[in-house]
Image 1 (cartoon, rainbow, N blue to C red):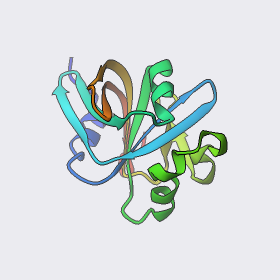
Image 2 (image 1 turned 180 degrees about the vertical axis):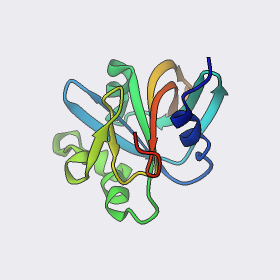
Image 3 (image 1 turned 60 degrees about the vertical axis):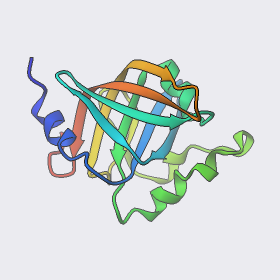
Image 4 (image 1 turned 90 degrees about the horizontal axis):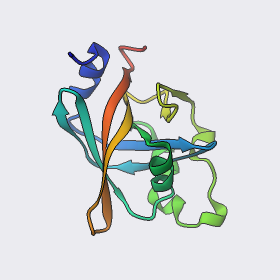
Length: 151
């Protein structure tokens, strides 16, 4: 079974930049900037992302079994500020980071930024506790879009 051409086109562009990993569960949305997204299999297309433990997104990914990966546009200063890790440290004052930004959803319902050059929608197939400050999520890419290949 060959991967969807939209997924192949989007995955081929994952070579550098910053990425936002997002998820939604029971109406609560969250996202965090990550520096590395890696393709770990071609058929089917699987991505790996390492997320720091204790971030508000972790239980959303765990419970929804889904996440999205969006490449952060180089000129998107607002998204960089909104998704900085410093904004997630106080659970009492946490707000929905996507309220200030135009979003859309793909197959799993995880929010993706409309301005993102690449968006990949994933279903969790594995989760690894690395016994370190991060944990690893492996996602099966089930949908994708790019600014020039809108779906």
